[in-house]
Structure formats: structure tokens, C-alpha cells
Amino acid sequence: MRRVVAFLVRIFNGKLTVLNKEKLPEGNYILVGPHRTWFDPLLFALAAAPKQFAFMAKKELFKNPILKFILTHANAFPVDRENPGPSAIKTPVKWLRNKDMSLIMFPSGTRHSQTMKGGVTLIAKMANVPIVPAVYQGPLTFKTLLSRKKITVAIGDPIVVDRKIKLNDENQRKIISQMEQAFDKLDDQIDPNFVYVDPATKKIKS
Image (cartoon, rainbow, N blue to C red):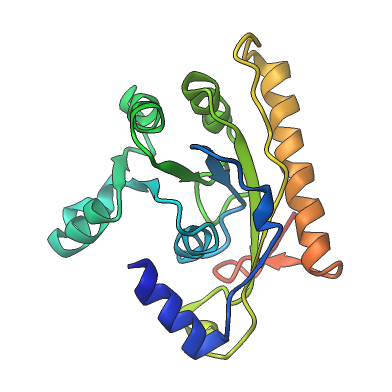
């Protein structure tokens, strides 16, 4: 799938630009970013190649047998967004510990919310892996994906979650703030004038 995505990106948008790839750590990690389009997980995975990734997908997508086949073979696992159970934490922790595979997560949960949630910090702590911030700038819809607009992914410095730290509300906010600041810094590195506008709502997201 990554080869197919790389081929299509090169045809329609030119070569993918990846900034700061040298900051990716050895071993497993959680690659996190603001969720701006339905295809940014594929572009994050492409930017961090050849590392293999797993990712979460809402359980409704697995009801379609074709999508289920694709998602399963892309190392995706279902999550109930309305009522996330223990498996939403246990599955990625187990994979990060026992497989040579990292995880792509979007702390905001959905493309239409930029409110950060704390699940990624808990998974990082339990699996003892760093959080690596990343941002994507480029086309946001399938139509604009075909417009030859440049695609860029920027990678930030890893954030280490101390295994001894208590993940209370205050410490969760501190780590979330670190991620938010990293996203802003990376966006500025790509384009100081960048403003994200949700293509579905046409609203500016901060």
C-alpha cells in the first residue's frame, strides 16, 4: 500500500517533502499529529518509511468487508469512539512492546476536532516509547489531491513520557501542551503563514 501511495503522490503532487526525518528515533514510537485529512495517516507512514506502522480506525469502517480486508492488512485495529474499552489501550501497548512496529495516532481523535485527548500519553507511558510529533501540509480533499499541490510532512523532536510520572490532569495537560507547541513550531517551519481550515466546515482550526 505504501508503494502505491508513493507512486500516486509522485504522479499527482511530485516528490513528498519530508523535513527533519533524522529526528525519528530507533526502535518503536508513537507518531502523532493533528488530523487534517482522511489520507494523512498514509502520508505519515510514507514519510517515516521504511518503519512499519499500526493505527486505530473507527469500528464502523470494519463493517464493510472490502475495507475490513484493507484495514486489517494495513495493521489497523477497530476502536469504538463512543465507548472505547480497555482494548483501545491494551492492543497498541501490546503491539508496541512485542512487535517491530510503531503506531500512528491523532490525539484529537477526529478530523473535525482539534481538542487534544490524553490517550496517547497513557499508551506511550505503558509501552515505554517516545511520542514523535509531526504535521502535514498539503491538499485536504481528494479533489485538491489531484491539483499538483506540494505535500510536506515535518517531524519534530521526540517527547519522552517518564514512566515514573503520575498521569493526573496537570501532567496530562503539560504533555499535551508540549505536543501542541511542537505542532505549531513544525507548521511554522513549513510555512509561517499556514492556517488550517477544515474543508468540511470551512472553519479555521487553531
